[in-house]
Structure formats: C-alpha cells, structure tokens
Image 1 (cartoon, rainbow, N blue to C red):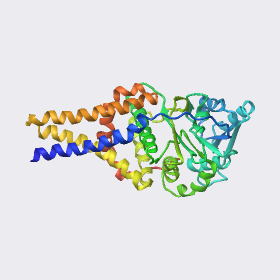
Image 2: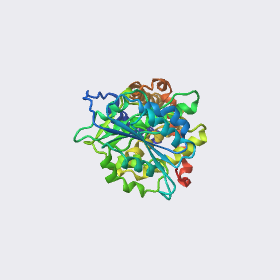
Image 3: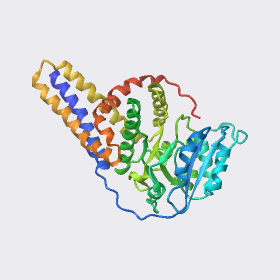
Image 4: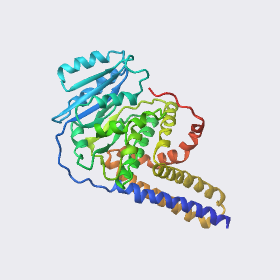
Length: 373
C-alpha cells in the first residue's frame, strides 16, 4: 500500500505538470499570429538612465535609427553626473526626435526608477508609449513597427520579448533560460486569456491608461520594476496582444556577473509577485510547486522503491512522458524565440529551476530587500 501511495503521488504531480505543458504553454508553442497591417500613429519610446553614459553610447543610436515615420525617444536623465547630459545634447543635433528629460534632486525628494518612468511617460507627446531599458538594443530597425501594429480600439497593451545577449559561461545560460522561461509563462497566459505581466524592456501601452492607473503602484513598497504590477492590474483577455517575431525582440546585457549577485536579484524580484491578482499567484504557485514536488517524489520513489523492480518501468515512463512533453513544447518555443542554443540544456535547466532554485531561495522568507534605485 505504501508503495502504491508513492507512485500515485508522483502521478498526481505529473498530471498537473502535463496540464501546464499541453493546455497552457502549448498554446504559445503552436500559436501563429495573423498578419496585421502596420500603423503610422505617433509613438513615444521611453527609457530611464542614471549614470550610465557608457550604455547610452553603445545602444542609444539603435533606438534613434528605427524605421518608423513618426516617433520620439525620451531619455529620462535621473540625476546623472557622468556626462549623460552632454552626450544627449550632442545627439540631439543629429537626432531631433531625441527628447531628454532631466530630473534634478531639487525636483523630487526621493527618485526611484518607477518615478522616473512616470515622469517620462507624462512628458510624452504621443499616446502610444513603448518602454525599454538603457542597456537594451532592438534586434532590428523594425522594432517599433512590429510592436505597435497590434493597436486597435480594443487592443492597447502589447507584450514583447526581452532576450539576453549570449555569452560564454553557465551563469549566462541560467540568466537566458530564466528570461526564456518567464516569457513562456507570460506569453502563454496572455494567449489563454489570463495576462499577468510583461517585461519592462519591451512593453507598450497608452499614455492615458498609464497615467490613470499607475498611482496605486507608487504606493507599493517594491524594490524591482513595477511594470509587472501595472500590467497585472490593467491587462485583460480583450485588451492585450503578444508580439514575439524576431524583428520585435529586444536584447539586453547581462547585468549580474556572479552567481551570488544573480541570486540577490532573484530574491528582490520575488517580492513583486505577492502583489499579483490571486488567480495569477495561484497559477504561478501551482506550476512551481508541482514541478518541485514532481522531482521530490521522483527521488523519493527511486530511493524507497529501489527494491521493487515492478515499479521501475512505471516511474521511468512517467519521467519520460514529462521530459518528452517538455522537449516538444519548450523546444518549439526556443525556435520561435530564436533561442535554439538553449534547447539542449532544457532538461538540466528544468532540474535546477524547479528543484534546486526553491531550496536556494528559502532564505527569501527572511530576506529584507534593499531600496531599488
């Protein structure tokens, strides 16, 4: 009887995982976006910077040289003292659609990135807003065109993909897979009618919608980007679109260069999720918990039933079914998002993020995050 209970527990968590793979993530894996006509409405691209002139020198031109007829680039300079102001004035000579917005310490007592973003959006000339980060670069000159083509009377939130630049090393693969895995979740949930987040590196929405809904976010005591909370509050099945074509990708630099630094970042970002709507928190918890318990019960079954060879093939079959499902669904998504180099690492990354990452983050329960910029 004890043997059967262990097997049934393993089977139970396997079924939950298969529901996510074949009824949630497969929706994105096998989704084909219908062609949409391009629009030429005015667009305001907004990014915030603080003492990052070296990044502006590397990446700003890619935003200023987009193939789009009517747009501006607003750079919110948050109290920089590294020559950012001089660089922006120099760029304005060649690019008149560049609009620097400078914030001084005299204007705001405490300036965080979420406040700087609000200032930038309030300064926008156009109703359509497209936000990104200072260390990010569009994959093509058609990024704006692809992201805003979804705008329609009932559709006005567009979720894009934010990749990370491939580099050598295990940490880079972990960061890239983490970004891919996050995108799989928010794209898939949006497509089944339950959008819950986006990424601040590649996100579009109307200026008026932001200004009428963002005040509640400013009151939250969060320490990472609050754009998740904004999307979680206003995104619905009807008003949200996804854009994942390669021309619409944003590629960002790897900011954490050591494993401890990355863990700290993950600890900080984990605190934002507690402000999500209940159904979103429940779905995220169910997926993560069932993944962890699948591996935990698998290990328990292999250890406790090692003398019962009659169960070995059943246990192996359950593991194989999940692995095959993951390989098919996630593998297809890696091709769709041009992350094929990660496909071979999917099984190993899954074990790390589903089994070991929760154990490494146990101290999050006792972690007091630091103020974020």
